[in-house]
Amino acid sequence: MALKTSKTTAKKKTTTKNAAPKSTKRKAAEIEDDDEDEEDDDEDDEAEEEDDDDLLEEPVKKKKGTKANKAEQHEDEDAGKSGSWFVEGDAGFEKKEQLDQLAEMRRAKAVDRFYLKDSTKEAIDPNTGAKQTEAKIVFLDSKPFSIFEHSLQINGKYGNMYTCTRDFGPCPICDKGERPTFTMYFSVIDTRKFTKKKPDPKTGATISEPHRKLFPAKGVAQDKLKEILAENDNDLRGLVVHVKRYAAKEPNCGRDFKVLGRLTEAKLRAKFPPELLQPVKYREVLAPPTKNELKAAGIHIAVVAGSVEDIESDSDDDVKGLLDD
Image 1 (tube, rainbow, N blue to C red):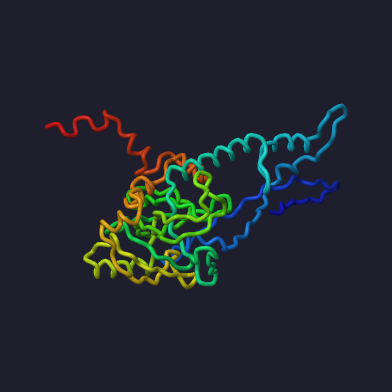
Image 2 (cartoon, rainbow, N blue to C red):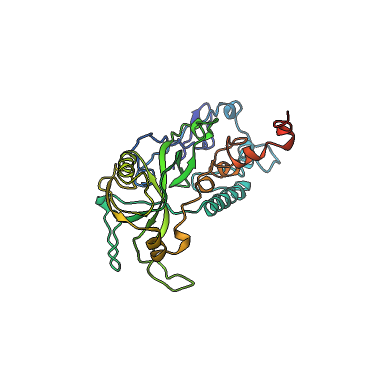
């Protein structure tokens, strides 16, 4: 990002320091079929000039015997500030802490999300024949776990999902202008097998096995799954469904669903290992972000309503006597 400078002409020309850039914040549109994981949207950064009049009140003069003039003193004061491609001083430690917190958050809530590419980006695995635009999935639960959630761009990457708290308290992400999307979550087994980029360090396997994923149903996909529920005794568990995505504007979970049949509990146990057959623990994986998690995302607040910190802040003294006569 280029930095702007401002120049003022007086009897003598004095050049001001570079103004610090300010990045414009991305505002996510609340579209039912919005694909929050697409990374092909380009965003423009803008730089705004700061008021440098105070720097120009007196001409810069170098006094005899001094090692630095006023301009050099201002440069010393700027030590530790960030540029468009670097961080300096303590900002480097702060950035490292932010990255560590983000990594820890992802590990604690690490469950793969089901995702299909649109048909314009079709790719077929040469070894397994698996496609990235369609899949055969097995549902593991009967009803959805539904939330409002935000998708944020952090360090240039999309797909950073945060549960919105606006239904029961202030949402610091909404306050920054980011709008949430209503999402119904299911647990599914993605039966596709893909060639690994690197062999498994423990087993040496080069082909992935079917594994459990979060299935984020949005927009028209929610309506279709409601119909499938009604047609199958309001129970999705064990249903084998072929799902496909065509256009880029369709939900990234797909919108074309075809029920192929249902696996009984005995057949589920015979076909998949037991650790794959339990639905995701939604209340843990999708819990509202903590203060530290938001801080790592660049959002600074006190305590998030409904987070673990908020719940644990109620001491014994706060609730003492509530059940007494």
